[in-house]
Length: 560
Image (cartoon, rainbow, N blue to C red):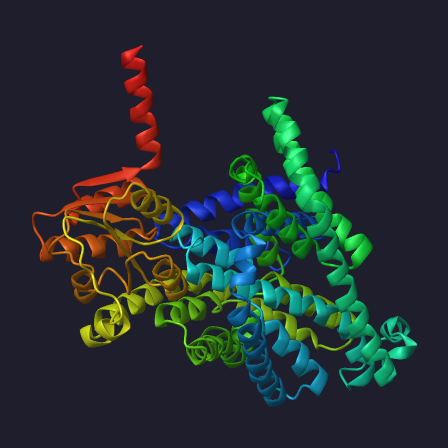
């Protein structure tokens, strides 16, 4: 029989992941749960076939590269810069809070200080992969709250890169579990003094800054030019290959020459490619490959998990899970509110951080190799990761309901106070709910044509920008009667609902229909289920991209 560990691992992973993913989907769980369980089945701690763990780990790394590249394609550097005031201090404060909670748990288990530090750091960083999936499912990627959530996790990833560089320094400064001779040999001589710590920090910051600077200075000119030339050749295969070469090539270049992680390198490659007019085509062409390797990532995580820890250390597992899903979420909620951000943003960030992922596994692996962690720490982190990723979709459902409830509880007096400087004098006008990617195009076109229009938007920065431009904008969420009243719905002739979240859009439509039964309402949708939901709530017309394209093609065919 041929010795083909790569083919065997990929085949087993895809087949078992498909079976368990299908079962999870039928049971109304996220397919991710099925992928994780598939990893447990093909892993070394369960009977039967055992996949090659080393091969699976490398395939998972490729999955992280492609997924982070996809994140970058949806998140330009302008978006990251726009949320820096909350993402940077918020992420740092949340990492500190979670690390302290992890250190307390480690102390209660009798672990030394160094072990508690690494363990706490591993619990502090959430998975961008899991977050991206959750935001995509809810069409929240292009919202202000979505940008804050992704920016927050990107800052966490950058912080973890510094932590990975500094862990060997910590290994020489703090007492941990008895290190092996190999570990002692690995430690650098300068790691025992303050100068070594400072030099490591400066070197790390310098490498990351140099990489980012080079990518932005060179990449912004070279990458769009290269894509345009390849697209002009008319070959779909060459274009897709060019996109993959850019993403994976920059990720590898970053790791080899700048000691930056593959994931972060791929993320910045995606951000640069985002500036190209062909970014949407690039994202569509690479989506199947990104989805396939994402499955391998989750399977590889499941392979590392030893189910016996659930029986042998149930209280420690529960405490770890509570830190990840409760402690971190509460800390993040308080931090976001302290920065005076809306409650819906605070709730979304809290739900986003209620899990741990890829960097947690990397930290634990390095901590074990350096003698900073006991073996039991890996099982606790993996148990916390699998359980938190499994439960995270339920947390997002709860968060969605909390956000909707908070919006309904907002007082009309508060809404009136927020919009006190604005006087809506328009009549027979158009109300546009949502000033995101779609709403902006619609509203700006109405303003340019001189059609009276009022924008409803929950992002204060966007509202203030519209007001400075002499446009009429109402701060708030369209699910509130007070907001719709402030926008003059009684005198309006048309309501355009451009928010990307189908559930929220349905509530806006229902509220508007109750307030003015004769009002014409047009909404947008991404899925067939959303079309049905919006129509059932009272929308006169629901526009879905695929349906409109098909209808126009059929009309042209009939006219030909």
